[in-house]
Image (cartoon, rainbow over all chains, first blue to last red; front, side, top):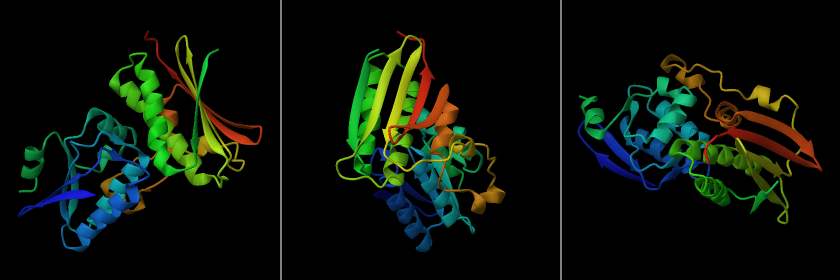
Length: 110
Length: 143
């Protein structure tokens, strides 16, 4: 489900699939939860391959942020305009740190 | 009025197809990418609700009716769910103002109908012939 890259300060992950919706939201949430339980609580979600997200996907992101909220963070980068518009509509862009690209996002963990 | 009808079984695997079908039809009218995404999103949200909240028999299907009007697109989604409260739409508005401080209280569910109401020009909910119908209209003055 996730392609994960472990770095010194941040764990970067990508979603293997273009759609984050009700069909896969539970598995996605469980995968982030598993990372957090393994101690990977500084997370960066590279969303560049995500073509479609619905409210179930948004809910899974909120759940992921809650999983790492004690001392960690879940940041987002490289959102397509459609996905960015969904986060803005739900006003959840207020609780996530969102970056235009991967390098800037990685640097924010320094 | 010419109506395009799409019928799908009550299964989450098919929700994406329903959304993609509507998007594909709307692409014919050369709508911009964001408008196409918003229409697809609203169909996906509505059909997901139909699938997850309906105890359907194997013979029953969700029906999507799409009509191109002179100034926009009208979409109606019919399902076999139980009757729902008249104030359903009012109860599901996106009116929260989430903050990091209130993170643990932020809901992980229940935004679908609110999104539809925010994105579409008109939204109505009703019941006819023992089915629920959620209808929405998207104003669009393109070709």
